[in-house]
Image (cartoon, rainbow, N blue to C red; front, side):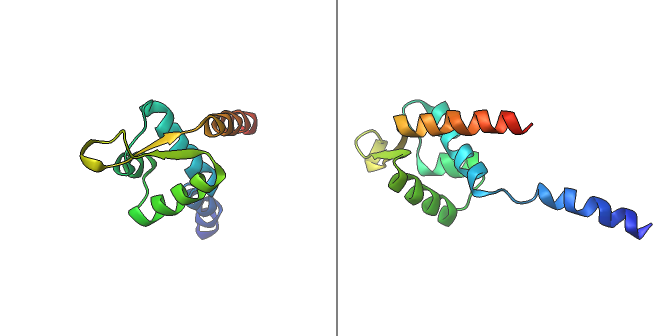
Length: 102
C-alpha cells in the first residue's frame, strides 16, 4: 500500500512549484489582458506572486526588454507596467512551445 503512495507523490509535487518560464508566461499573459498596462499589485494577484518575487521577475523582464514602466499612465503617481513588442513576441513563442509539449 505504501509503494502506491510513493508512485503518486511526484505527480502531486510537480504541480506545487512553477518554473521561471511559467511565471514569466503568467506575468506576460496578465499584461496582455490589461492592454494599457497593469499595476504591480494586479500582476502579483494574477500571477500569484509575493511582492519580492514580482519585483525580481519584473527587474529581470525589464532588463530583457519584455516589459517597460510607464510612470505617466498611473493614477496618483503610481506607475503602470506594460508589455513591449519584444515581450509579445516572447509570449507567442512560449505559448506555441507550451502547445507543442502537450
